Length: 105
Image (cartoon, rainbow, N blue to C red; front, side):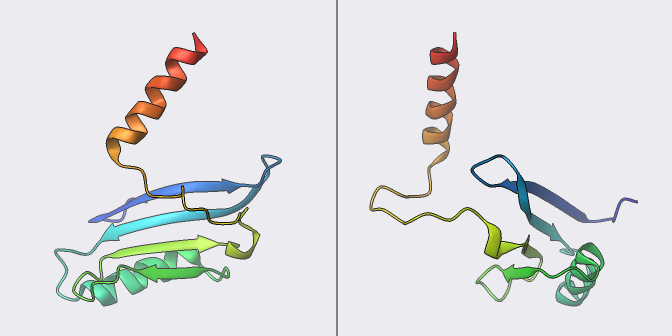
């Protein structure tokens, strides 16, 4: 059933063998609600049911309508952080996709 005013992005997290080990979800909604925090608290509670999870809220306290939820965070395939690790910009992501397409043909 569609929940009015809420959008979600879900990604299955896989280990190095390709096995699903958890889920990562971003939920955004409740902007038009009188109490967006309470609304999103309920949305997240309904989404996770009684499953163990981690929940992160966007750091700006005036933005209670964006929630990041993970399951089995302890099973995510972590690796050591290096100086080369950064968040890619949109253009970098586009370039990576173009390189992949060109190299696959």
